[in-house]
Picture (cartoon, one colour):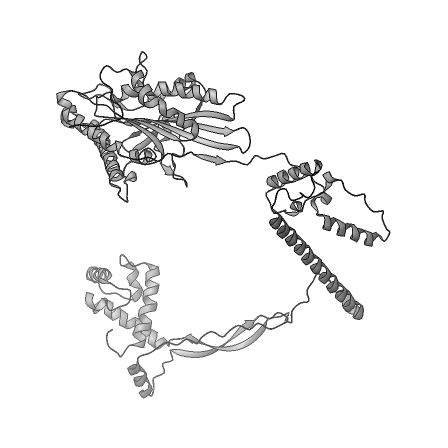
Length: 583
């Protein structure tokens, strides 16, 4: 089997060789506002954590990268340079599909989100500012002790979680146009895949191993989907792949360090790691610069009311003042070139900060004696269109003012013609509308439908006097806008009334059913089901017959509220259908 990679480091290679050959070249991309990531992949016990952390004598990728990155930010952010730089760090682990903050272990499980631009972020993750390597060590070393490790047959300090160190570089431009850049560096120490037959995992270790192998399996599925160009890439199937979405087929410069163990017992793990690394090499990332623009806010410029008005408005304002005072005023001295105001000053809907900047530049051009540039460098055709629009708006405003004066003169003339209404009339008040009476619509008449057979029998019986529906007059109050007292009007409506003979007959029929009827007969009553029918039969066998219908309240499962509803439903039904047979 043959594999082709960017670099190969043997057993005699040092930490400096690995860092200088593969990791150090990507740090420059962070200062350009791009993302980068370094992943250590391989089976358990292959040396991934040693590659990333190293030892005091041979520091690994993480301490070397932080040392060089802080040095670069100090040089690029020095006084006199165009950019001001700041560095922050976050440290987390993914343990059994939970995202845990190692800088603040008490924060609990965190969620992974995606912003509108597709960037992966973790709300609530602790960020510590660092300016030197000593600051980094002060935060990183205690957090490293919070990472979950455990002993197996293959490794006494086996990593039981995926650790991710996130270093963010923020840049702000000191001069216009005041751009902002953000570059992120992910340094990831993945937990190794484990064969539980060799590691001897049991209990909690077996559960941890299952979570690790599951996340690494999803990682392989993501790489395969990216290589095959599938429409759906399963990033969301695992917290690890969701976090690495930027690094796998995303916008980061990614480096995968595949750690292998050249021993016969690790043969299958070595082949699996090499195959995964070969497939990952085919994944194509598209890095881009994360840059945004922030408008620089100038100090507010205080302008007087006359400065905010254009030349035409200022002239009309002076004319109106002269008319009110009635005495002519000496003409004002011609304004100098620096005092000429631009039509841009009348665009009050513009952003105040931008308007102030445009006005300052306009005054600067006027003070330098430039002629014919009140609208800055606007092309002639657009400048003429803008000036024409401004003049049209001025004419429209003048027309509306003249119309208002005509209306006011008309109102004054009406007041002079009818002095009686002058006291109660105000130009700003509208006359009340003519009063009108509001009537309430009559409600629909309601009736109870009776069986045709029963109606015929009742009509044939000479002594039958059953009046279920009775017409009754009732007065309703109507509201009126101009009436001080509500108006009363008699209105016909229908109300339900049942004769006492029918009520007594219905109650007696219900009582007979309760004492003599079977469970099937009892179910013919309203609100009585199979369960309540059996309860009634059992109660009757135990306590004897019912003396009155209200004794049902003593049966278990029938409350007083249900009893009232039961009587209303059944007495009316039995009274209306007394000769129609069982329902």
